[in-house]
Length: 505
Image (cartoon, rainbow, N blue to C red; front, side, top):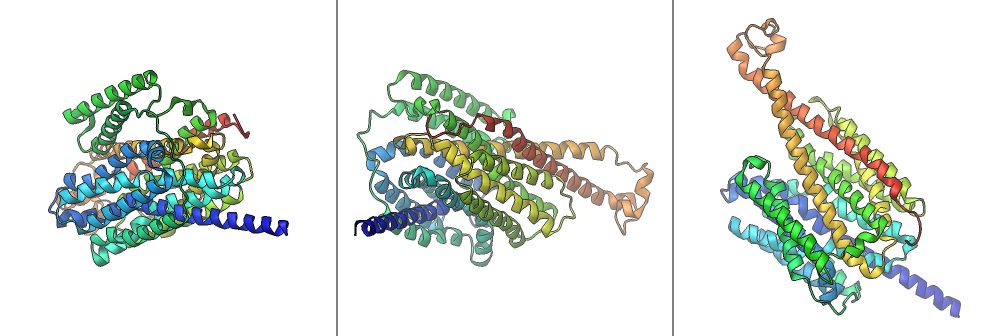
């Protein structure tokens, strides 16, 4: 009889673990979805509000800034109100902010509610990961992180295709309205299945540290997001932001060394695996989202693909992620370095394949690298989470997870900014080199197959030549970005030797 009771308890615990995992996965996917789904609606929003390109870009920028500021607060907020109550507050605020974005009648209102959406949504992903790791035993971290990670990265992968279809069929407001019912469903799951916990006597809060850190992060995000538009250090605004950022970071470090309980505890950085994990998640954030920024530009502007077909190409990446996460979950008991190596090599190889693109590639030429990249991202995420958190005390998980995801977001911002800078600069350089050789005295330009079919005079062909020179120069810029992408992955491999495989430090 006792054996039957024990079996029933085990089954109940197993069911509860899965219910918690499904609830947290839904919450994570919704938040991650909003990071990319709004991008496809920006042209419609720009027209609706009669905004400039500069003004409408703040719809994305301010959301990212709010997320970056609030994410490190997750650990302190859990200690203050408890994990269940915090999730309820965040999901309810996130839902109302999303609904308000859909109903907004001015750009200023959209910007305000996007800030609220980013602020309320910021703690969801790190807190969800911390709750899952608290509920699941350490020997099953691989499986739990596999399923949870699938929701975190598949949302941004499929978001553009869904958002593009909604925007084309129903208008930009439905991009935000779609989020509301699913957010309410996730909220109901939290209220039903998530238990209270994590609340503790909160030590004296480091308000100065939080203020300095927030100023530094906001300045950094603004530099990254606005730098290319403002011509980087040629702009007085960017120079001022850089000075503010450096001063705030320096004062934050000095403050952390002087207070008893700093905003970000230095004790977290004493764990070797966690420090290695922070570096690797920075790289992961760098390589995970960059193709979502570069590929749509390449395919739409220089290949003429419609939004729906671009969405299908990005969906292939989501298919690869499902395969990668499933394989990673099955490999949970193996040495995590195996998954890290396989995932990093797969992502790097996909970057090398993309660097071979030309302007005549077809759908399957685009799909195979995307699938391989998705597989690599899935294979890498699960062992990365295992390595980072397996040797940490469970009491530190909320704070450690918030810093972990902050570093991931910073990696994304930094790398996307670097890639866009490389793209623009190399396109201009290559175009300048090509047009140097365009001259009416060049004998090759007398042939119709060179100057364009149907053109018989030099002046008639000048526009065609300039357009083709720019297209080929842009392609060179994109391929250089993809080479940089591949090299980043392969250069990360030697860091894996610092991963320690043991149960405790």
